[in-house]
Length: 127
Image (cartoon, rainbow, N blue to C red):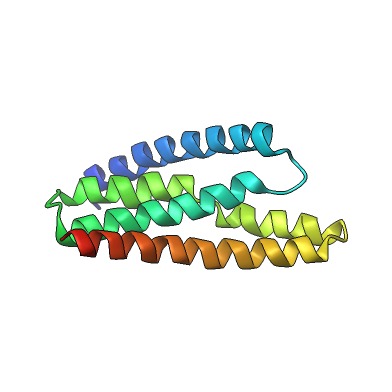
């Protein structure tokens, strides 16, 4: 067990979780609470960030493993929200908003994976 890695995850997770909270609050104030905009924005940007970090680690940045773990498992892991995604989808369906739930599921998955692909391709193009 590597305590340096565990500390990296814990510290990064705290940063990611606080950032997630602030983005969710800001999104709610900006877009309203009738649709889970905060979770959607967090899933897309979190996927973009982990794609960006992973691409940079592979092609540009020669960082220690603890830093890589801090950024990906810690920060991105604490920031992204697919468990909340599931709960938000459930609540939309429970309220009878089936079309919104379907759109939310498709948009979350397609745009998050797309953001990761764009980030990876951007880093590769710059390498």
